[in-house]
Length: 173
Image (cartoon, rainbow, N blue to C red; front, side, top):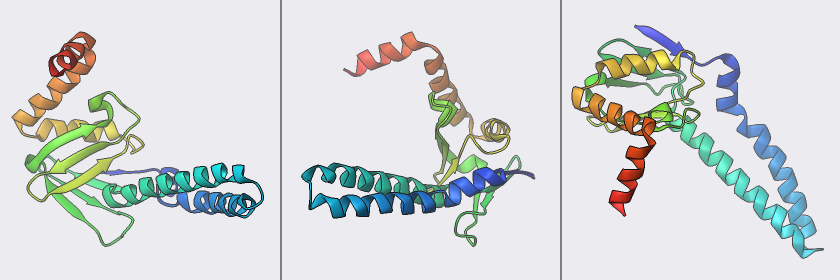
């Protein structure tokens, strides 16, 4: 088994950065709320802070749900552990993976890759900030089913060929 983990700094940011940010934004939101009764235009900072707090915490709740901070893998299975909820552990047989999307596979290298296990209906997220994430993706791609591999490869080839993706868009319209 090969183990992949996030660095300590990445782990702290992905787990706890929303707490001080939310508190800071709440202070601004409360002050905007108080001044809103004096001047009407303070409603805009209030709403902006509210929207940012909601979006930020939705992102972190999604991270807590889908992103393991430790991934053990061999050629047959993936064991995901060290979620925000410590007791949670997911085991995925690589051959049961029926969908891989996002990240470098869809042309956005800064976004995470999501792996779906169709047998257990489980989604696991892999951030590009994971140490040696490319090696992990290589191991997964080399062991998934041939039809899924061909589908992922076709999608990546279409990204590399802008003319093909434009033709595909024209065909849909």
